Each structure stands twice: as C-alpha cells, then as structure tokens.
Length: 265
Ligand SMILES: [Fe+2]
Ligand SMILES: [Fe+2]
Image 1 (tube, protein in one colour):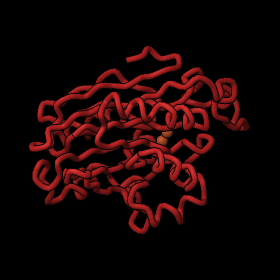
Image 2 (cartoon, helix red, strand yellow):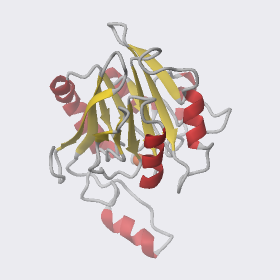
Image 3 (tube, rainbow, N blue to C red):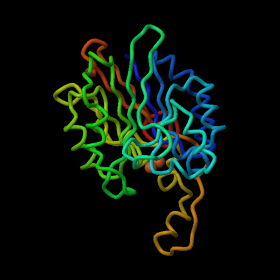
C-alpha cells in the first residue's frame, strides 16, 4: 500500500499550498491513501469543521490531530460524528471523537490508522504505550489489516524512538508529529516498521516552529506576548511509505520536503 502522510499544517498559507500541491503529490507517489495532521490549520490553533471538509473534499482520506485538537470550539460536535477526523487515542474515556479508524480501499485492501499522543512534556493523557497496545489487542498485521499506520504526536525524541522500537513489527509505520521540525532518521526498523521521529510541519520555516519570529522570541523574555502564524513561503513536509500488502511490513520510507527554505528531498 502506498501511504502519503503530511505533518502539522500551520495556518492559512500552508492550507492553500497543500491543497494546491496535493494532486501533484498524489500523482507522483501514486498514493492509495492520504493522511494529514491538521492540528494547527486554523490560525495555528486547531481545526474548524469547514477546514476539515475542505481537505476531505480535496481527496484527503484521514485527518489526525494532537494537543491542539480542541482549540476551536466548533470542532467538538463535528468530531463526535466523524469517522475520519481523529484525536489522540489515549485521551481519557468519554472524550468525543475517535482515536483510531479503519479504511477499506476500493480494491478491498484495509488499513487501520491510529492517532496517539506521547506523555513527556505533553498534556496529561493515558499512558501511551498501553493505549496503543490496547488498540492493537488481538489484531494481527497482514492478517486483520494490510497496513497499520500510527501518527505519534509528541515532543521528546527519546519517547518516540522507544515507542517505535516497542511496536516494531506490530504495525507498518510510526511517524512523529508535533515538534514542527523534520528529523533525518527516516528508516525501516529491524522488524519491518517504517519510522521517522518527526516528519516536520507544513508551514513557513522562516519562523519559530511556524509562529512569527519576534513574537515567539518575546515569549521567552515575557509572559505577555501572544503568537501569530508566520505567513510566507511554505515548505510541505511529510513522508511517503510503501508497505507489503501481505505482511503489512514496510518496504520503503522517503521523507518529503517541497518548497520554502528547507533543502528539498
Ligand atoms: Fe502538537
Ligand atoms: Fe503541531
């Protein structure tokens, strides 16, 4: 299965650029499924139903989120009815929305998508290792699902690497989001799980992780300042993963960086 995943979309310019470039990326990678983390799409803070619909209408299959999921109040009602907009699976019981969903492709192949949030330096949630483990209980990669994909939303590289190695071979791919900075460690782990600690954001990198530089720097000196999105030339960051349909293991992982100030892939 050919999976195209893009990291945290930050702000209006990033939304516009991704929607414009999506058909080219889909063609280039012949993607069977497109998954995007949308947690900063609405002015850097969360996502609205209208924005989510725009992405679904443009051919995106699944949207994932993270700690910013509740920033826009309208999303609460929307996510409660959605099978395609996910919030982290380890949020406490009773939280609206789903943390995992499955998708059947037109040819019958089936993929499970899980959104999970790390525990270190993140808002308090259930223990992420256990939550992922429970969500995989009695599931066999390659048997129950052709592919299993995890968007792992977290700050600490150590935690993300530990989780990836703990679940190596149990899922097709684990890719990190949240730091907004891509890491150069995309690889396939020994038991066949594709992994990258963080795929980076889709946003303007001439910024402090997507936010206007002077305001973001001010915040280190004072508690008063508030942040706005750094609009400007966008780098699209993500990853392309190809899995074996029988075993569910990964065959290939390629980081994607297009446009803006980062070195292109
Ligand atoms: Fe985040
Ligand atoms: Fe983010």
